[in-house]
Length: 493
Image 1 (spheres, one colour):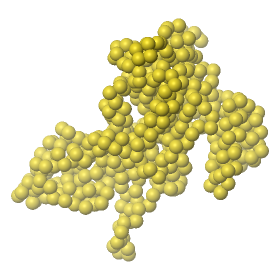
Image 2 (tube, helix red, strand yellow; image 1 turned 30 degrees about the vertical axis):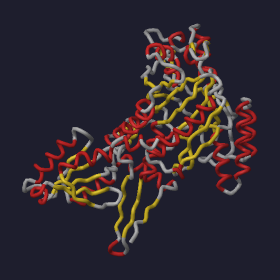
Image 3 (cartoon, one colour; image 1 turned 90 degrees about the horizontal axis):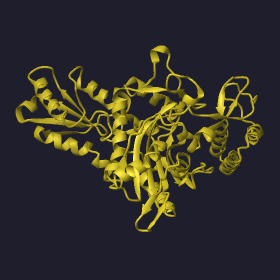
């Protein structure tokens, strides 16, 4: 009988994914022994491996595969004028609204977007699209009264109280501030960076000169960012402390749309290459452009709670470098020998959320499988992760704890661990051990049995199919390395 696989399509599945993440060491609520901290999470022993592999897959695709892209690691704390120049001090706000009955706070734009999505789901997509366009127009004009009137007109209610007893809409700055030095006054106020991009822009000249970089070239960075979100929810999708993987590509003015289109296509191929299916990915052009952009599109993934952004591609023009040149009074121009002139480069940005992509991988990988019927019915849960991203690549499992099998298995384990993350287990039946590896996404289980002592062969059990094959021990390392190599991702980009 064929296997029946249930895809993650609803909130019930999402709850299972969240529970699975905690139970099997992927994600824990931060400071849980003190009842946690809202919208802050810690990555467990398997989560950190998966996330590190994800970051490596991005870094290799950006820096290793592209001769004209290099990396930096900028500090989280930056001179406060950085955020004045970038527009964050004056304009990094979300429209906030409170319900007087539930005392709950919401992002006004999200309430309207959720109504738009509900209309689309009810077969009224045109009406939903018109609603989003009206919202974009109001936000562009900073018409907060208009946003409030829109919420009232659409009879949008609080999900908790069920009432429309709203406060007015007001702007809420998302940056966390703190003091540096021994005196706590306004002059010493600095910010936790709300994005990693500015650390690249302020180092543009340093990298360009020391690396003798020629336009077009890119600077990549992976790092933490912090936003005081009004509503942080949906597990690791929206957090107050999160990690970004960003690349700023510096180009000649006038060539931005060519590079924008090229990076848009490249980035979609990367998401497919790491195992996210094409039918769950889509582009969504921005209705409202950010103050620095002349073109912008999101790559969205279909989570169990709907299509949501996991990456943004933006044509940022020369806004950032131009503003930093103005505020710092330092020349940030590039002399182009081909054009024989100086100019401030334009920038195309690719910015992907590491935590959001981690969650997309987890949701996509979570698989409930049923085989057989009646007394032969069997249920299995496993994570169908790309082998290169899986936290553990292989588990070495002696069939018994005697007859020299543990010694043989440990020899294999000690050899393989020099090349990849592997585990050794000898407790419980082989079936239970297979199941323990399935739920963390281990692609290969290596069973060492009595025949192994006779002919130096082992059985490899494949996670997705549960099929088994006999392999010589001397061929094991090369066979598994080929399957779990990042090359299997990079070749598809």
